[in-house]
Length: 187
Image (cartoon, rainbow, N blue to C red):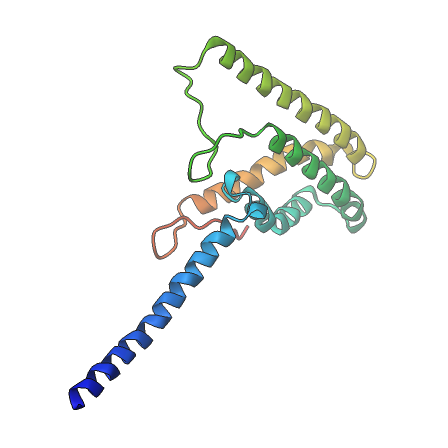
């Protein structure tokens, strides 16, 4: 009788010890599913999430580098935000539809593609470039109305410097498990 009670007690304790482990695994799986949710655009490796994390830093950096006054910033940022949304829409529209099982865009097989496929790829690339150029012309003429043209000219360079700094800061930054940290900037 005593051995039965001991066995059932040990079995019950063992099962109770497994509950936190199972719960932790479920929590981990929920976080994993959360990252791969449609609104995170996993196909683009969380580009939207990364964009949202970087946005406040980018606003601060550009505002500081362009030396925008309070009024200039108030007038400039709504225009820039619309520009950025339309730019992302253009890129999303032309993004490859075929993906790997991990959700990343499939890299084309350049060596084995036919001439017509290569021509189509160039045509699509040039179409995107034309759309982006038209968008930049449209919005930069709007931006010139609210900030000096010198600051509009600086904008491209400041954006590139921001991306370079983010990439440089994060390239060698790793967490305790050796994975790259996505966003950690102090500049």
